[in-house]
Image (tube, rainbow, N blue to C red):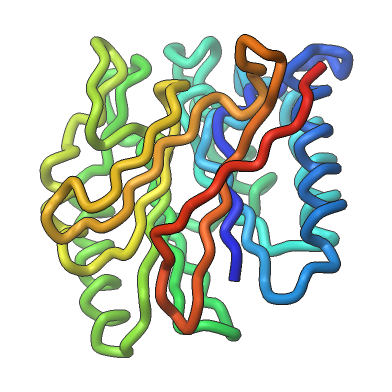
Length: 255
């Protein structure tokens, strides 16, 4: 299996916007490279897929996901921008609308590979039960309890677990932090092979830097080119149910 990690697409209402065009570039590149490659490919998109929780942005996301789903398993979780205008003004109607677009049940979200003993668990760190709506994140007691049960269950079944969410569980920025990050990290220790996230728009790889957490990967803003006008995304390889630590990065030209 290969796991492709995207995050923070920030699709807008303008199909000619750089974010939208670069999102399609990424999708087309991923399809051209991996649609016919041997093995299973899972695309994980860790939130802020829309920019302002607007209907036209969700339509753009529907089209993009439909293309990717023709070839791959696609797993998504929400970010603060998916539920809130400008990422800070919560709009309650956005919650069911976004969940319908990305085919997301109430979290934690579980998907199990039939080809490898790997289970993906998605969390909603843009928890609508939070009573302070800024760009910060929170998992909440209910999700943490659900995660705890699922990790115990899948460990007993001998399955490897990959957790994905939007907010960064390690690096804290003012107004953007994951409030209950320590509780999350403690529950994952020794039971999670990899954790994927975004939010901070800064790419980072934490390999064997935290006891019991072998691989934590932060995606940058996937649709934002670097200083050389390149877009990039990470690919994580698995073999026999083991998540390899030989993570590599694919790079293509942006608009």
